[in-house]
Image (tube, rainbow, N blue to C red; front, side):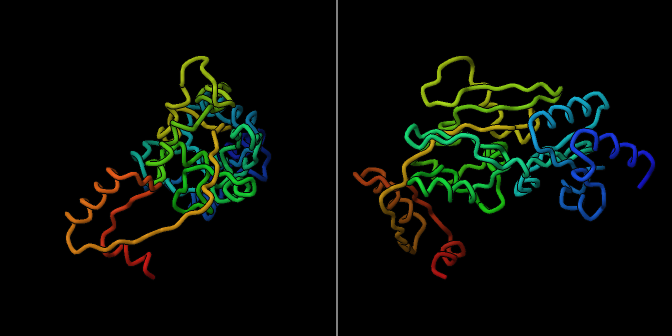
Length: 260
């Protein structure tokens, strides 16, 4: 490690502790984005630490990439510079949950699978259902706008994301929206963070509206020899009294996964 890298790691350790600053090549390989690796990866444990890191990075003109479960690092434009990886996966607590009000507040590093298990104990769920659910974090799902076929029944993330706490690139702790469903104060600035890929701010808290689990669910597979027949079937369902949560048209390869 160069003297400059040692000095940088020492400075960063002042914010999060030396044990939560990764600089060895093997660890940094996991944070690679389009062939670029950071000089260091930091694992903050609080909003205050994130704010300190971003104030330092802004003053030193260091480029920061927020990271969660690393399931969407491959999307978006390649970064021109990549000095620090800000890994928020350790911030994974449920901060508030009111089942009777159908409201929820979580830190960005909690995985969808972990949250889903907790919500199902109360007969509720969050209609995101991303791929790699055991790794995908709520902060990353929102930042990547990773919607799923459940959006046809429940809407997209912007329809049930009630509010967000975030830290700007200058290290300013801010928030937008609220924690309850009936919140009409101010602009919906938090909606801008959906799909922003961490370029506008680092998300530190997300407030959602939850949904009751259906009493039961079933999946049906219909096979067609012609593509036009499959789409005609979808149109017929749309015009019928039926209200399925998901209708997907699959090619033979994808359909084989369901038959396996």
